[in-house]
Image 1 (cartoon, rainbow, N blue to C red):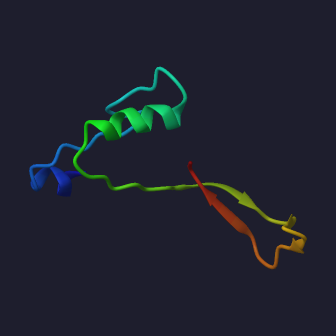
Image 2: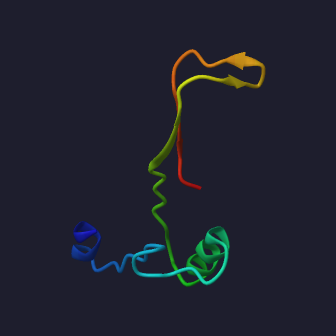
Image 3: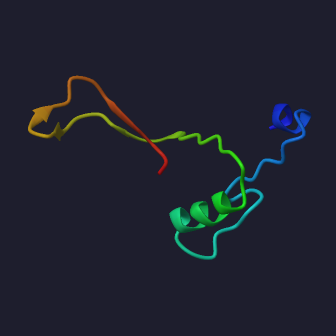
Length: 67
């Protein structure tokens, strides 16, 4: 975030600078309404080691990011 601040940008991060009063995605939409641009990061939160996806067995673990 320091890199963004060095560019005179003010980062807003859900759960860090902004706290949701409703569903997280609704809060993201509200934050975006006041922004002129966005960098969206999805960090890995869930790893599925085995399973079936659309009728096919997973060949390797599936890593899913945040919403």
